[in-house]
Image (cartoon, rainbow, N blue to C red; front, side, top):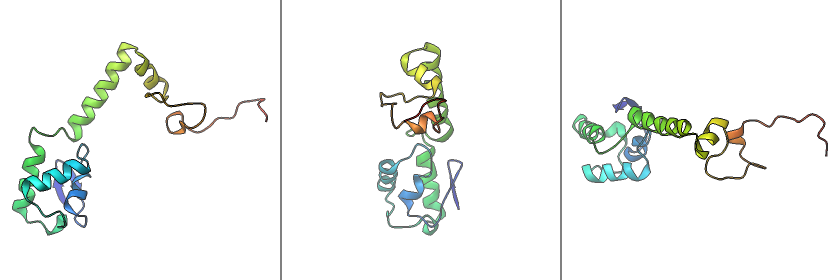
Amino acid sequence: MARIAGVNVPDKKRTPIALTYIHGIGHTTAFKICDKLGIDVQKRMGELDEDTLNRIRAEVDGEAYMIEGDLRREVSMNIKRLLDMKCYRGLRHRNGLPVNGQRTKTNARTRKGPARPIAGKKK
C-alpha cells in the first residue's frame, strides 16, 4: 500500500479513485492532480513507480490543498465558533438537529438518531 499524506491508499484501485481516500481530496481534485502530473487515469496505484508516487506526495503535501488533520481541525473550529456565538446554526449543532433547514417532522433520522416511542400515543 502506498502512503500519501499519512493515509494508506489502496494499490488495486485506479489512481484518481485511490486519491479520494485522502480526506479533503474528492473526485474532481483527484482527476486534476492526475492531469497536472501527467499520470494515466487508467493506471492502478500499485503500478506506479516510486518517482511518480513522490511527485504525487509533493503535490498533495504542498500548500495548494487543505487535507486530513488541517481540514478536520478547521471544520471543527468553524462548528465551535457557531456554538460559541449561540447563533441559530450553532444551536442546531448543539441539539443534534439538521442545520440547513431540512424538515424534521419526518426524515432527519440521521441527525436525530433512532426513533423513541412516546408514552400514551396511539394511532
